[in-house]
Length: 487
Image 1 (tube, rainbow, N blue to C red):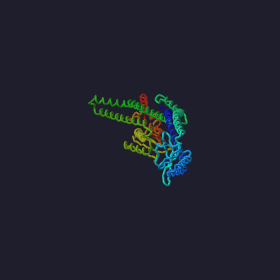
Image 2: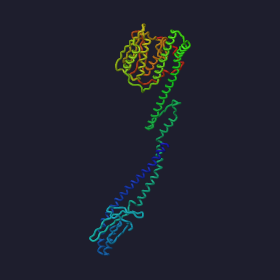
Image 3: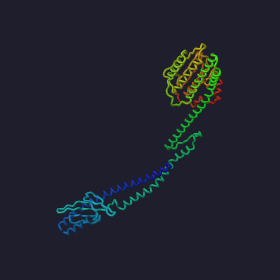
Image 4: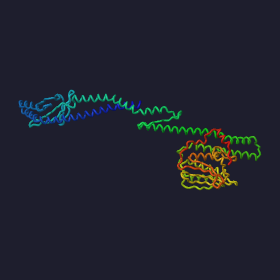
């Protein structure tokens, strides 16, 4: 049932009830006013005829019929427009409009009451009449004006008005509701044509002045925006999963084939000399370690692609750097790693991602930043620069050639002697972008070695538009992996 029809029916049922209730209340108030006025008149008449009623009872008690007749005529003349009934010990005198003698009257009615007979009603008032040798009752009657034809006519008209008000008010309410819900119907027609799955067209709503309709339109726009956001995230997740599969299958093929070849050698040559057997096993362990490292890096890249904004919080960069330096020192006790960090520098970020960034910068410096004697000297600095937090990692290695500095953050790019996965610096670039920051490589301040510098905004934390560091075809992966960078 349409809203306008519901409103029309509701009004069509409510208005007659209100008319009937108002009419009933009006009739009750009018009846009370009429009774009040009529009762006042009865009391006045009772007071005026009471002396004649006493005289009538005294004449009757004294046995004087002529005097009693005279007093009775005088009593009726004084009554004027009301009915009179005097009930004495031995006789009853009545005259004027009143109920029949068969109608039972109250034993005592010091206040006016209503007496009914054959569809007629009277207001009745009794007054005790006391004389020396007798006691009687004076009754005064008057037709009940509250039950007259005019009042009954008003009652019928109230009922007729209620019956007419039902369809008229229902139709009027339906017409008004139809006009009022016009903006809602137009909004419904525009919304019905939207298909978020097949079209990029979204709801365009102009201000109607109807608050409920405008609020509903705003809610629909919000819902559609959230749908688009979730659809985009779902698409990213699917693309990431596909790319992860393609990247993993491509990059894992080489170590797995190498491991398979070495296993075939061990299986086909059980009597292989010990030096050759040791070389094969060493190669197996190296490929196994590379395989595990590659899987870990791919997992971390996938986490960075799928992290949600709810995971972001305030992170103390100095504390994260201190933990990363301590962990790197445990992994390589012979390396000399120093940290100079300003306290209280925080960013709104993803703490596991910042640790990945720091861990991979340190791992890169320890792997490629050793001097000619093979010693690792790494200096880590954390400082504030206006609205940014700057993380710098300096080493004493051969540095990065200028022509390679734009490419070393690509996926699966390794030096010819590197045993890594080629994803460490890719993770650094991913996390810098995820935190709305940037990463660059330059010469170290003293001209020896390389400096990797990451800048993160203190008020960052919003997710970038795209984080698809795994998304790409196997062909692109193969193209990138063919460019080996010597550093």
